[in-house]
Image (cartoon, rainbow, N blue to C red; front, side, top):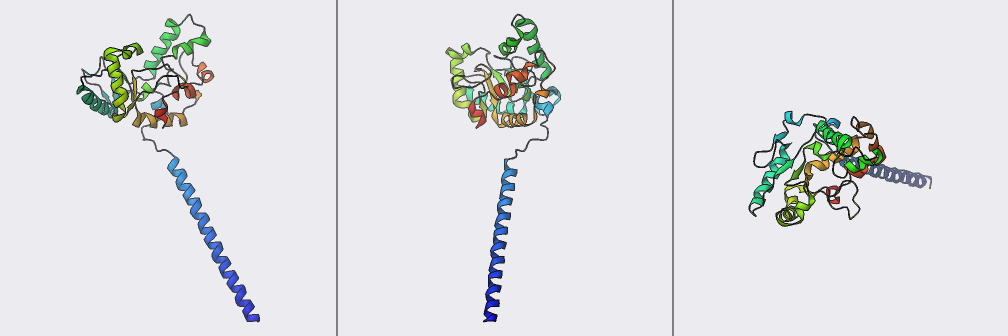
Length: 258
């Protein structure tokens, strides 16, 4: 009887250890799965992507990743990233088959370029507007320096800077073609109608963003940039009050966030 009791106790101990080992193994597997999942959710960014890059504080004309847009496809000296130019050229070839032509009228603008635009509007164009409203007035169509997508080399303005141009005739035909086909080449309109609650800038039918890159840059911007980084221009003190990062940098077409 005593021997049976010992054997029974041993079996309980053995199976208890076995169950405990399996439980520990399962817990380890769960922890490893969680770690893998967390690792997979951490985005990887290209090595060249820095705070200065997304803030526009670099010389794109001396950057090997940027190219000058060829004559005939731009109305002045304009640079964009190589990937963006390649995609645009493919889009232009496709559009040409339907007798549609696109001209890039604005591309990469660094911090200093955007600062000149902003300060001119602050000190001259809207100088009679009260300061608390002046920034909002400028922000209808122009970005604060350090908050513009044009800093990144991914965004281009096409053909005309007036929405009315794209509302009829030739312009409407061009816009409808873009709505139907631009996404095939990676381009999306970031500033669509605000009727569905989009915040930020007014609609810009001419402004198209190369999503395969701009989505990465926006993700980096949201992780790395704070209001301490947005400074050194007229009215910069209003950036936090207006919540530029949330309402303008991220005030974009929902398709760009999917």
